Image (cartoon, rainbow, N blue to C red; front, side):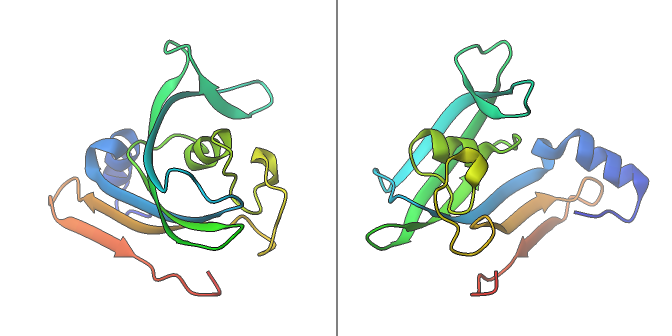
Length: 147
């Protein structure tokens, strides 16, 4: 996300969650999730090795909320529509991995396969309110084989 003015850049950076209405991704998991649709909530923290994980300690962790639904599947993998309600570092990767559904190509969080030679996750939708004009801004990409 780029801004034309430094003022707007700072407003967005400092109050991102106040302006963002929707953030969506698609991800391919190595395992078909069960259930096919869910909301995952946990408190995320980062250790000294820069590995993000869930914690029971709400004083050191920050609340992370991820919603997903399976939109396509085969015997071994699933394509998920993922919506994040909070924007924590590695949130989607951690939530899916900790439930046993690592993203294909994500070796750091437990993936055993890498069919695309990259992590099989991409941002698809961003909706936000402009901090100054209050205009609704919506950005969406279509997923292709090249994505």
